[in-house]
Length: 393
Image 1 (cartoon, helix red, strand yellow):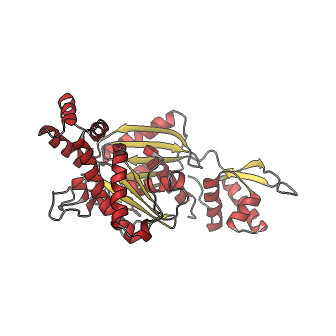
Image 2 (image 1 turned 120 degrees about the vertical axis):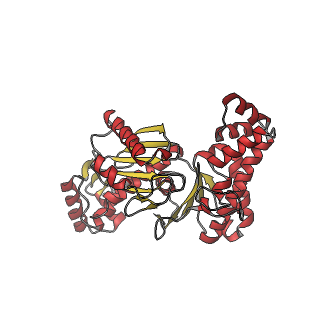
Image 3 (image 1 turned 30 degrees about the vertical axis):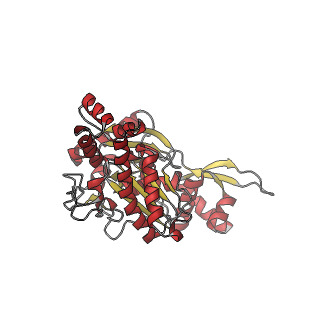
């Protein structure tokens, strides 16, 4: 198992090397505010642990040239992003660059044992392909609420059989390394904040619109999980009083009206009753419909399909507008599978937020699509576990 840093100074040095790449001793000293003698002590300790290695001479800043150091090229992190219908698994190096990435369909309703076995098999494939001989840590995202310290899902609405399952403990035993488990949207937020569109934004919201809808809340460059880990569960905020039943047991929730399952349900309904000729053709040809069919129908000019997307964006925008008024973020990032619905969805969300929230909150507020796509979750998972490995024990 990888040695952990001995103190906060070492932790700051490791995180700086992760985020900025190889650095000279002189630059590191400036960045973390350590004296030359103190920096030398910390660097020597980290060299002894093997967490960092020498990396040649730095460019001259006048006088004697400083020596570069970098994180060990042997460090490997595993990022796992389990969704409702698929899983992404990736291996990264210490700087969180993806070395190998696999994506496979799965059904989270098959339960934790079957899903974890598939994830472990995917990790084994990446090892067999030569991307890692071992893992120094693994971060795992799941599509439901998680009691973060224990890594245990708690009554997840779309994950039957997962309530109380010790995901962290089970995967840690199999992988032989530290494991942290979090809600998938929190990891998407961490990924976009580390290497995506929100890089450099200290406080922002990241809304994932997929099978379900959730929101990652980043405050001061840290994910806000709330007291019990349920912060950001916006899919179960009511948008229609006494409305349609939701998987959580309540009525009128946002997820009852929008998200992958709701959109598929509504698409089949409008195809079956003749309101959408384009979707009716697709339903007749395939026997079923998916959100990608709605996107294609909308792109072909089908007014009903466009209306379904606009209505979903309107309702999602309602909720985001409330969050913007309450939280006053620097940015709102929209990600998840349903971003494939295109500009119509984003435009509808933007219109609702800019109309409902006060000008002081929205005057300089970008509402943008995420940059990392399917890799946002695995990058965020690797960032999560690297934070843990680079924190004093």
